[in-house]
Structure formats: structure tokens, C-alpha cells
Image (tube, rainbow, N blue to C red):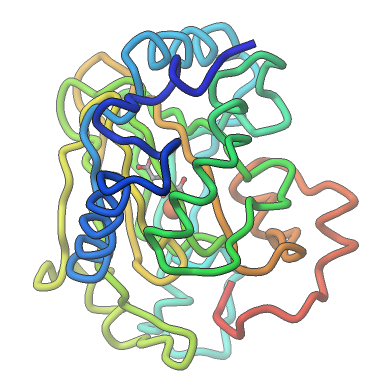
Length: 281
Ligand SMILES: O=C(O)CCC(=O)C(=O)O
Ligand SMILES: [Fe+2]
């Protein structure tokens, strides 16, 4: 059974010692970054051996991955032809990428172990200043790996869950940058005009990250629109995506789940009508 210290660089990030001064310093840092940038990156958070085990897990399971070349709007909804053609809900872009869904992870997966750590949930909750925070109930999307091969592109979108961590496992030779627009929408304002501008290549508010394997990123995927630029070169990009939510019951809508993870399960239909946060999904 893997121990927390075999996965996380506790010397630099003492998330197992929440009473300590160094934990307080760490939280002050992550809070400041999240408030200023809408995102926070912690270098070398995951140990290299654990990254290697996660890479091997993806390699062993490549055949299970659902790859898509479908067109999506930023909300993963069906087209609504009653809207003006320039409305962001009517702007569709091809996504080429795949997921090793959470229900396909191996029993002894480092990623499952990481996601199940109570220390991680507390650390993410403290960093985001969201109490209580929950792990996501979505059986497919709660902690998948995203895999992108040469020429793949993941267009601008919002996530179905509130907050996402990312841990880069394997970096593309070129491209594959994570780009985001911090807090472009909030629960009271969809900000469709600004969203449309970004979709039309206005880069005024766009930030870009060059993540390295082992880095931990915390971001607000439901509120900060984001994308992954085209993968160039031979090396595929692998990234782990543990997800967190404010509502312990809400999961992806069936349509969103089908578009992103290739299928919807009975639980997605059962929970389809749970009252959400009011934002387009
Ligand atoms: O691959 C990434 O860095 C982000 C992926 C993403 O936004 C998603 O899977 O929803
Ligand atoms: Fe996303």
C-alpha cells in the first residue's frame, strides 16, 4: 500500500502537518496566487517515482481510452439555433483528445491513492478557501487522465465541476500549453460577450502556463475558461485531473458526459435534474 510520502514531496509541501508554521506559509502562498491569478502552480509537488508509475499506468491502458474528434461549444451543450450566430453557445470547435476515465484506473493506481488522501482534500479546501469542499461524485470524470497525441487540440471550455487540479505526467515536445482566462464568469454573470471575444482570438485576458512533469496546478475550471494548445512533435501529453466540487451530489449532465467521456451512466440520468449553480453546462 502506497504511503503519502511516496507520492507527495512533503519536505517542500508539508500538507501532512496542518498545524505547522510551514503549512500556514504554504496556504498563504496558494491563497495569494489563486486570488491574484485565478490559478496556482506548485513545482515538483509529486515525486518523480510516482510520476513514472502514473505514466506507466497510462501506457498500459492506452487501448481503453475514448478519443474524440467532435465539435464542442465551451459548455458542452447541443447547438441552440434560436440564438444569434455569434453567441458563444453557437461557436463550435473540434476537440481531439482522450481520457482514461476514472472507472478505468487500476486498483493500485497512484492517482486513486492521491485523490483519496484526506490531506489533499484539506489542502485544496484551505487553498481555495471553500468549506466544505468535496471530492467529485462523477464516476467517470472525478480523477481521469487526459491524453493528447500529436496534432490534438483541446478547445476553450468550462468544466462541469467547480475546481480542478492538474498534474502533468508527460510533456509534449512543443505546444500543449495550458491557457486560461481567470474568473471570466461567475455565478451571477455568464459574461457571454467576453467569452465570445476570447473564442475569436482576443488574447487580452489570456494567461499561459508551461507546466512541467510533477507540477501541481490548482484552477477554477468552472469559472475560468481554459484550453490546451495544439500538441506539436512526437511525444504525447499526459495529465492527471483530480476534480473537486461544492455540491457533493451534482455530477455531469448526460450530454456533457457523453461528449467528454464517451458515455453516460445510469447515475448521470438519475442526477440530471439536481438543481445546479445556474451556470450553463
Ligand atoms: O489538460 C489540461 O491541462 C486541462 C484539461 C481540461 O481542461 C479538461 O480535461 O477539462
Ligand atoms: Fe477543463
